[in-house]
Each structure stands twice: as structure tokens, then as C-alpha cells.
Length: 430
Ligand SMILES: Cc1ncc(COP(=O)(O)O)c(C=O)c1O
Image (cartoon, rainbow, N blue to C red):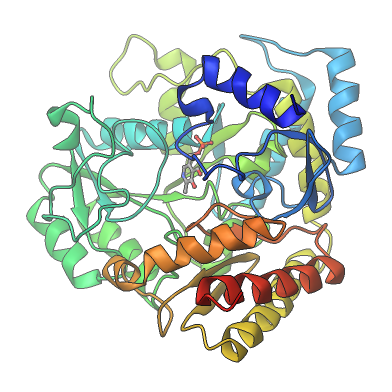
């Protein structure tokens, strides 16, 4: 039996669908990865893909940057894990992260981005004494019950209610999430004012999936929160250290009250954080236990030294002058090549880019709302992405993807050539 068949059989024996998480590609595209390097991943049979999944955005330097690997190896030789006591690397990482983020004064560790959004919402509720959070339709904030409302509905939501993405979500939790359309400031303001008596905060992905904020939208949320006393939470799990060193807050020039972080701050290792104003993050201060105004935030893997070592080594590169300009320019060069192919092949799709984030969407113009996004031909998006995968390009079909500092012109040329072949197949010309 082939190595691939062996691992498929093993995976199917123990894992639902033989899969990881919610993604199950068609047969032939269910890879078992053995190694990775730079922009490439290699499966157990030696097949190679150019990888734009990049750890769902965590790997901004690409796979296995030598000094990040070395830092993790060194840390593994010192201590793998500590609980209830900080390590030197965790303290250094916290100091770096707080210094990088505009207006931030304090941070509390988590293990994942999901945990960070859950704690951020809990802090907002505790700080205001109110039970509900306003979330945007189509926004993803992780795997927990509060985050899982109106994540990817197939049709516009029955505002302010949203539909949970998972059975097992208590109605009581669902009902604490008020759902509003993204990029519609009037709708948000109306909802926030009508529900001000029960709303604790607003959580927003500054760039919602692949949708950029309209000019004034994030600024409008800031003013609205100032006016109504709501806590403004930016979910920077993807945008943090991705759009710029100071994340979306620096990129768009709008400061949140608190922000959730994950992915890049762990350099591919387990790491997350809630970062922001001291008056809010300090609600987790251990001395507050047993009194009112205390938020519980603790976990076995919080501040994990391996994640901290990887994060520290990664952030060291991101502070290099020109780093963000360089990955954004590279992404634009890739996008230009892809756009040329789509035009030549008469495929009615656009290549949307923001910094080093990109996606091909079958629609005539950039989406500005979730309803816009729904109007794109999503089956065609997925079909083209699957064909890209069959041509050696690793993406998650239908989702945004990332360029890393390890991607180069040869990767882009191969990606453009792969798109050309993929277009011929989806058009039925081969
Ligand atoms: C915007 C956003 N928030 C939160 C999360 C959850 O992070 P994690 O998967 O580390 O729990 C993700 C994960 O992709 C995300 O994209």
C-alpha cells in the first residue's frame, strides 16, 4: 500500500472523516504532510505544493525559518512547559507585543485565538456589567459558542439574531450575540443605541475575512463606542502583525479598547493574547479573585515557552524596516499575474488583495458587505480553488490566503501558470 493509503486508512480509523477540523477535500486532495520548508509543503509521498495557507496566516515568514526553528529547539532544551510561573521568553514576548500595539498597556496570555476572543468578550461583559455583544454577520472569531453565531450564513441573517454554526449551542448563549451587517454604520449605530442598556461591546474583524472596512467604518465604531460606553474589541487574530507591525489598529489608525491576538505572535506555536487598556485587561489581575470585577483568565498552556520562543524569533524579523511593504508588493505582483490570466481566459473573477492577504472571487467588484460576498459565485470560487490545488497550489477552497516572506518570483510564476491550467479545466477546454 502507498504511504498515502496507509495514512488515510489510519486517519479514517480514528478521526471523523479522517479529517482535521471542518475541511474535507475531495479524494486525491486529502494530503498527509510530512515536511515543509519556505513556501513549500511536501506530503508523505514526496509531492510538493506551493503553500498559501501558511498556517491559516500564522506563518508570515513561511515554513521552518531557520532561526525560529533554532529558537524553538533551544527552548525545548531549556524548558518545554511551565504552569503558574512565567518564563523569561514569555515575559519578553509580552513586553514586545504590548510595545508594538498602539494604545496597548497590558496583555493577558491565552493559548489560541479562540480563547482570546472568548476572554475579550468576557472582559467587556465584566467591565460594563452588561450581558450582550454585538457581532458582525460573516465574521469568524473562533470555535466557541459566542463566536459561532452568524459565521457563514447562506442568506442574510434575521438581525439582530444569528444562526449558530454548530448544534449544541445553547439558545441562551446565541441570544447574547446581536448580529449586525458589517460596513453598515447606520445599522450598527441604530442597534447599539436601541440595545445600549444590555450591550457590553462590539467585536469586529477589522478586515472581515476578505472584506475591507469602508472609509470611516472603523472610525465610526470607535465614536459609537465612545458615545454609548461600549467596549470596542478588534479581533486581530489574523490582522495582528500581518497588516503592519502594530496590526490593523496601526494600519487603519483606529485604536480599540482591547484586541484579541493569536497566530503570528506564536510564530506557528501555541499562543494567543488579549491586549489593550490596563483598566480592562487588569480585570484579570490575580489579586482581584474573590471580589467583584474579576475576570478569570488562566490555562495550562498559557504563555507556553515553545510558542513564546517561536513568537519572539518571528517578531524579530517583522520589525525590519520595509518588511510589510515588501510582502504587500510581492502579493500585488502575484495578483497582477493572476488577474492577467483571469482576463485572458475570460473568467469573470477578481483577485482581491489587502496587504499580504489575497483571494480569487467570482464577482465583478470588491465586496463591501457580507451580502455582496454571498452574491459572488461561491461554487465557482471553490471549483477554481480545487483546480489550483490539483495543479500544486495549496489553498483552502473558498477562503482567503496569504503570501509569506518566503514566497518568491518562482512561486508566483508557478502559481500563475497553475491558474492558467485551472481556468482551462473549469471552462471545460481540456
Ligand atoms: C479572525 C479570527 N479570530 C479568531 C480565530 C480563532 O483562532 P484559533 O484558531 O487560534 O483559535 C481565527 C482563526 O482562524 C480568526 O481568523
